[in-house]
Amino acid sequence: MQSSFVMVIFGATGDLAQNKLIPSLFSLFKQKQLPTDFFIVGFSRRELSDSDFGSYFKALQDKEGWNEFAKHLSYQKGSFDDISGYSELIDKLKKLDDKIGACVTRFFYLATPPDHYQNILKFLRETKLSEGCGPHFAPLSGASRSKQESKWTRIIIEKPFGKDLETAKALDMKLSEVFEEKQIFRVDHYLGKETMQNIIAFRFANGIFEPVWNKNFIDHVQITWAEEQGVKERGNFFDGVGLLRDVGQNHLMQLVTAVAMESPKSFSKEGVRDARAEVIKKIRCVESSEVSKNIVRGQYENYRSEKNVAKNSNTETFVAMKIFVDTDRMAGVPFYIRMGKKMPKNLVEISVVFIQTCHILFKEYGCPEIGNVLVFRIQPDEGINLRVIAKKPGAKLSLGTVNMNFSYEDQFRTNGADAYEKVLLDIFAGDQMLFNRSDELESSWEFITKILKGWANLGVEPLKYKAGTWGPEEAEALIEKDGRKWI
Ligand code: BG6
Image 1: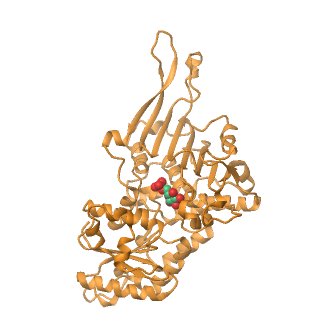
Image 2 (image 1 turned 90 degrees about the vertical axis):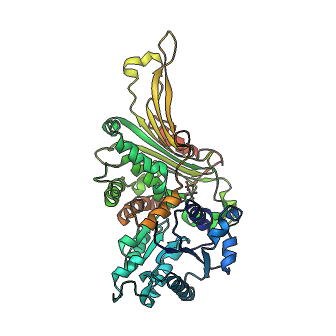
Image 3 (image 1 turned 180 degrees about the horizontal axis):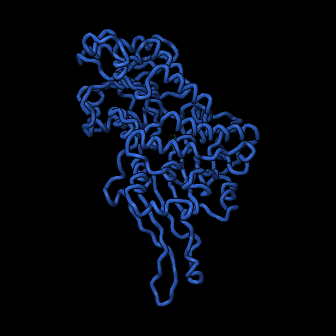
């Protein structure tokens, strides 16, 4: 990338900046993917000097190249709900424009807890920071301050985008008062994952799958999103949000979309976003009265003793559900989804299970219970596995399953680009394809809000499960009552 930029990170001392944003920016710097003139300004409530801010990233400090990178970091102390920090930020940014002698493109990255978004947007607008470098510097000679100037700014907003349908709509309204759609980047980093992008390439670049990718051949789909860790240091954030909002409303919806979408009209920003939006719109809402039948809500034992978690918390750390996508292609195909913290292992996987036909001819020869399964391993050990039935060696006919495996590591000696690096590069390039459009978010919130309301109406506590297990027993029952099993 060529042009200079400044990225202001609101919430710069938080978890996201620490673990994802700064490490990814550092990595891009080392790969020489950042321009010569780039500036990263941390904005947070803590009292820190520029150099304190640099030394805040302890895990990176001893790495080669860090000292060079750290020269691009500076810090602005400020409270998100008080104008004074923003006013000082204006002076800081003006100095950068003057140093470069041009309007430096400004990226405002909201990496704070979501409660602060509305306030930050309000102050960005009030101080006119949202409008770019402003009157102190005329980017186009003689040009009046116009919408054209707004191209010098972009807003990046992290998930969860709101708390429910109503708050998501309100946030979107606020965003559109301050920024134009082309300036807005609503992040779901799962869209930036190599393996997620590959599902679309795999499905639509290989003509052999399209004829069988529908309800006539697919028996069901299973999606597992599992993390070994609990809430760790994020109790404060997580306890107010819960797993359904934290990953269900966004990452899991996108995994469903990748499997169920139609071929985009074109491989363009709007083509792909339209195809995604269409699937999310067609996910059948689970009515309140059906919630207890089709959704299992769990909480791991001892969750309530975690740091910064309420002693009587009913926040869910596990969810299993059975849903349907009512499109011509997928009508009637159940999607069984489970997501959980404190699971036996880290695993994000989609299994597309095809209708079993083995018994038609080979009933007595050891047809496995489940035949063809195509597994997309999102992480770890990124890759794809196709399970097929084959004859075992020997004089007597006996069948078994074998795996045809593609592993990124074996094939390309890499697990692919980091998702946040991809997200950042697309922001710099102004490419919104892998960012949520507001209609996608609205539809997914509609679906999620119904479940949240259903739980509130039921008024029962989440089911307990032991750490290191696959959630409450009821999650097994959810799929077993249909005569199927988690893979
Ligand atoms: C985040 C969630 O969006 O994704 C976290 O807030 C979760 O709870 C994380 O741990 C998982 O991301 P990844 O890329 O490690 O799968």
